[in-house]
Length: 542
Image 1 (cartoon, one colour):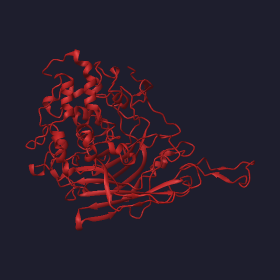
Image 2: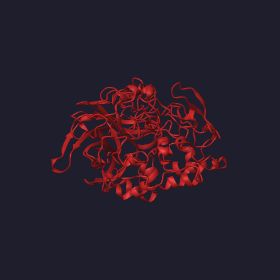
Image 3: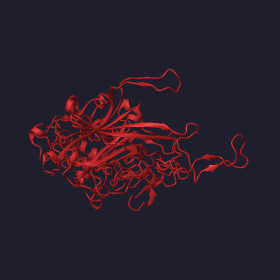
Image 4: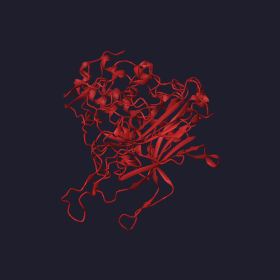
């Protein structure tokens, strides 16, 4: 740093944490007023990355409905059949979708007289000898344990959801609408009730992975929330734990902590919670403009992605109790998500709903939030100038690779082959260079691009990428080499890893936490861990 650090200013670390962290509510967990009142339509996280075990494919994951308590029966957390879930891809640099994947769900109530959505035990439980009339002794009371999504072993799935997958290519009269469901019955994986009802949940969940043909796989169901963050400190007026900092400054890491890949120094407050997830893996050639794979240096290797949830524009409830409502055929967008920081860190609260309901191609309406971010100025002010920030504008159309430019333009380093004509408009898209192959697990870095691992955020986003810390540092200016220095490049929340181990194959997320055995790691409680050895320790309590 050019300016010596005045340690009398360090208590103001709470202020920088306030300025940077307040909007990062577990990526997109209830970040806008509208979705805070509509949890089912709330997109918690959006991921797009080259598949770990097949560099010819891309995996996209849409997570919705935040902070699901695994034990919260009896109905648990189905997808909303009124919501249209969509994944969108721009492949010609205009920030308008060229490919759309649509997911629609349907719910059936197979056990209308049973008190819980899911029941089952062993080979079934029958009425005992003293069973009162009219139920005769030996009559089946509880169906067998749930071991399948359909057929024998599925009798206890009282609430079961199926879904369809539709691919739309192009626009207008020339668009192609392709039913990828391919006459299959696709079932969503239910919540993990517990070992009596679902004695082999990993096997049950694996049945929810479907091969749609043509190199396409799909999964939908309740899973462990892959995100990780110290939420409790964030919302206790940004009361970060001094003990979680190697330099004794809340929200600032030491070098050793910064390179720690799987060790937490504070509690992961999303630990133990579930989320509803839709994942699809498909050939890169289905997503690019010309239907081909390209090398990392070619512009056509880069796609822009985002996800949306939409509801029918109007809904009229039935006059009779339990009757079906009347829904409009037209939809209105409720939420969208591209990058995991733009709406949270840059957009003002008064515009968050407007942003959520708009489209990336119209993001010029919000450009002021990117050109001179108020939160960056708050960081600078909180430290009394000790932490320098870039001079606005933070985005320069003449140099789209400058500072925050790669987050809103098609530009280097994510798109080194993009010409000025391919820069596109200012748009919040999660851009992915499909020509950059996956990083092996042994070399993968939680800080992704900032740590030299170019296969991760902001080049797409993998489930393990520490987007909280990456986003904090980006706001502090580290994407500009002149500001990539301490403490800007050491801002962190103290949580470096998820509480569950991710899968290395599709759908990559860990399957749902058990309701019967659920628990959460709270501040001060034993439960901080090393994700490699799973050694239990004690979380900092100060």
